[in-house]
Amino acid sequence: MKNFIFISPNFPTNYWQFCDRLAKNGVNVLGIGDCPYDDLVPGLKKALTEYYKVGSLENYDEVYRAVAYLTFRHGRIDALESNNEYWLEQDARLRDDFNIPGFRTADMERIKYKSKMKAYYKQAGIPTARYHIVDNKEGCLAFIAEVGYPVIAKPDNGVGASHTCRISNEAELDAFFGEKMPVTYIMEEAVNGQVCSYDAIINSNGDPIFESGNVTGSSIMDVVNESQDSFYHIVKNLPDDVRDAGRRTVKSFGAKSRFVHLEFFRLLEDQASLGKKGDIVALEVNMRPSGGYTPEMLNYANGTDVYTIWADMITYDSTQFPQAEHYYCGFVGRRDGDSYALDDNSLIGKYALQVCQCGRIPDALSGAMGNRMFLAKFTEYDELMEFFRDAMQHV
Image (cartoon, rainbow, N blue to C red; front, top):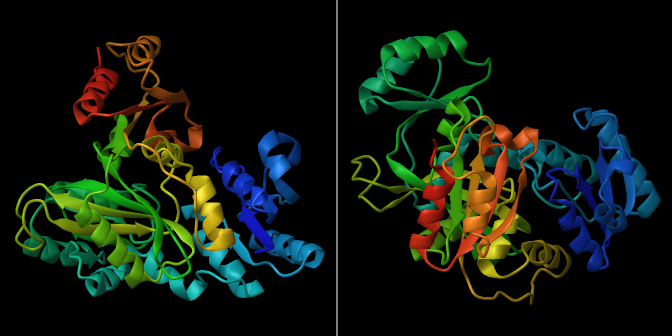
């Protein structure tokens, strides 16, 4: 590994650490972004061999010229990544145009379109919710007659819970058709399950060199649509059934040489079309790290450094980086304008020995995560739950 192009290395704000660890492994890290060089954090400036500023990362011609320039300056590009859901399709197009290894445009359907994921989950032996590609009200009513209310409607190619809604009756269906965005939507039967994930760093053979996962306490759809508090946690030890489902999903989708965040439901009750209470059901794949502060949480929970493990995978296809004692690591995102039984200082004071990190959440992430975040790690599950109760008790 000689030359690595990192797209938008300054956002999210913690992603400069991917570049830092690559540079420490002797890789030429070449950045392309729309942030002025002088505004980059010192650690990122130090890690980058060269930085090319574009006027807009949305302008493919500009980004194409940036890659061409960096190729001319440094030679063949060995890898190109953003580790960001928003840029996955552009990353693939750049790999096409410059013959760079990794996911190409032809791979995007199965990893970006929720409807296309279904066949690969089936290949992996993991059940998925029944679905219907939204066409018109009559077609949706026929689907609802089969699966019953409520149903979930969301963009077939979408990021997170953006523009996702629950439809519980015909009046809400009418409202959906009156307001939905002009993109292709998928409608799915509702799953009564708790969202859990398989977070892993995968080598070039499709095998994991690091594995962990999280459990989401709040529905991201409700957090976004109803401005609720956000909370989730990294598990102390990854359950065997999630590990198995994650590994089978990685193989079925052909994920190699990347960080993955694969989401599943654990059923909270028997559901005839899907399985028994406690079974694992597919939700969606994300061929990048879990967003926000999850990399830091993975580090705190596993006593390790996933930035280094990822960089070792890119550079050496393996890692010797150790893990220490495992913990639960919880995230809480509070909303500006809400009143809490414990204010921020009181919450930090009570959990002074457990809080690992706190601060403002960038505005671009606040819709799904809140405005102020608190990360804390615990040995016992009951302690984690007490922290969540204290952090989210409103006045």
